[in-house]
Image 1 (spheres, rainbow, N blue to C red):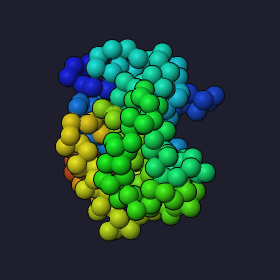
Image 2 (image 1 turned 180 degrees about the horizontal axis):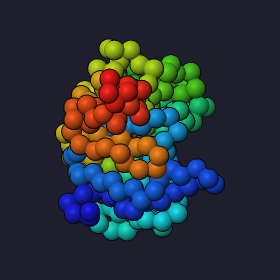
Image 3 (image 1 turned 135 degrees about the vertical axis):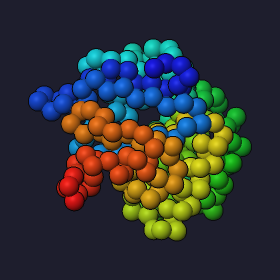
Length: 244
């Protein structure tokens, strides 16, 4: 499953006590492709992101970046090699300004001096609709702006693979539309996007494929329309009986 994929999870196993999170999961995404991941709460979607980004070690299996085994590399090294992620619950440095949050992310993720990333951070702020809040403390932001900042911090690292964890949750229809347009632009630059999301209309507007995680396995994968119509997916994920 290595080429031409930029990021590959190969034979991933993970459990916490008696709870099986991943039981031999294979998942891969190409540069410029957008892959959606859905599944019931507690299915292990965010844990997979932790395994991909290096925050969680798999019990077995490999993580590959451009075909190279990075399973034992720490999160900071993976970040500098191009894997960035957002968190479902935004985790900014609340005492810092919005701009300072981006500078820290960019300098760390790119391995550069802070003064060398200022211009790039300003560009990301403008792109994410945060320029007018550049000097505001991150802890004073609204939910929408905290989500924008979470995405902006990931983009500031100049990723090749962007892992998004429920960035559309809690947004209005208008806000979702803006987010969809932004993510479409990101993938248009050749960045691979893997997006965990429950807001299905936002997800299906962006992704090429959807993978459904349940019981430690991928139970369906393919084009969004086909996956959503799958009887097993409708029963397990959407609560619709298979014969309904």
